[in-house]
Each structure stands twice: as structure tokens, then as C-alpha cells.
Length: 54
Length: 234
Image (cartoon, rainbow over all chains, first blue to last red; front, side):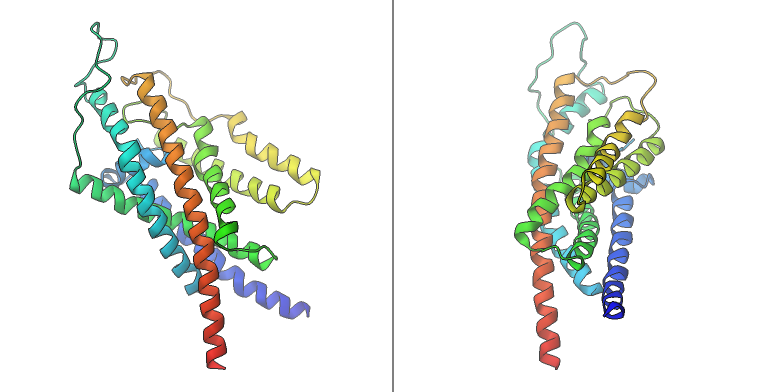
């Protein structure tokens, strides 16, 4: 019983952590990386979404 | 299971992000463009003569506003991935996740990602004085993370000890304080700055509520599809 529950949980936890990491990577890219091209393209969004921009 | 996370997040993020982007174009962008007239020096506040509060603003710019739409959709897809990760773990521990309960998850996401950092680092119009951007980003991530943990503890905690810890976590970043500028140099009238912050938070709340509901809906739908496929293969 315990083993079964552990396995099911692990099956869910790995993809969940993968989704979490991917999500943080995406918002870092769109909202935080200061590379000039990205900053200029995302400028208005960063302000309107409340990210620290400049 | 990986595809269930990815598909739900893509659909929810794209839908909510598109609506968020359009709301920002209607409600936030005109305030931002107005502020930029002061940032560029075209309008000058406290310059002696009174300045009109209703100047001509640049209209729709396909390149600039199109990029904004795309980046808003991407940002909300990132939010959706993070939100669904939490939803998936919660469902595993017995919580019910669907379009209806997703609404409250969305509001919680708004509190963690927009309201909590915005309480001390209010959404800024272009041209305001601010501390070093890297320092503010570190504070931003730390505040979002502590608020996220705090909200999880409030939702799933079972006793007062846990709730008190959650309250302390919510307050800590603001007691410690965010990086602040040494001097004020912002040329933008306070009325525009206040309106901008209010509009940014209002649109954020609407978009996050939708994002949570969409994420819950698509998550449940993808789950039903996956179960049907397994049953079909058996």
C-alpha cells in the first residue's frame, strides 16, 4: 500500500517540478533577463505586469 | 503526465495571456504612453505653466503592441506552468481541481505574483527613480516565493501555528524592505503613476482569475482524456 502510494506520488512530483522549473525559466526570460533585444521587445509588458524593468 | 501539464498550461496561458494582453492595451498602455511623454521631456511637470491632462497620445503600433501581446501570452504561459505544478501536487494530496476551484487558485496566484511584490515595489511607469534592477529582481523573486509558500500554508495548514508562520512569511519581505533609490528623479506626475499602478494591478487580477479558472478546466479535461485513452487501450 505504502509503496504504491509512493510510486504514484513520485510519478506526479517529477512532472510537477519539471513544470515549475520550465515556468520559472519562461517568466525569467520574458520578465527579467536584461538582454537589450528582449528588454525592448518586452518593455511595455514588464511595466504593465509589475516586473522590475530598468 | 508531462503532456498533461504542458498542454493544460499552453491552452490556459495562451487564452488568459491573450485576454490579459488586450486588457493591458486598452487600460494600461495609454497611461504608459502618457508617462513616456514626461520621460522623454515632451511634457514637463511643475514647469511653471499648467499642463493638459489629456494630451494626444500615439495610437496603436502594430510592431510594439504585437510584441507586447506575444510576450504577455508567454508570461502567462509561464505563470500557468507554475500554477499547474502547484495544482497537480495539491490534487495528489486530495484537493479538487477544476474550472470552478481554479478561480480561487488564480486569485491566490495574483496575490503571490502581483500584489505581494507590488505592495512595496509598486508597478512602475517608465521614468521613475528606482534602485538597481538586479537587486530589485532578487527581492521580487524572494517575495513571490515567500508569498507562494505562505498562501500554500494558509490553504492547506491545519492549525494556528502554521497560519502564524504564513502571516510572518507574507510580511517579512516588506518589513525587511525592498531596494530603494537614493534620490527621486521621476518627471511623471503622481496622478499618472498612481493610475498606472492601480490599472496594472486591476488588469492583473482579472487576468489571473481567468488563468486559474482556465488552468483548472484544461487540467481536468486533459485528465478525462488521459483516462479515456487508457480505458480505450485496455
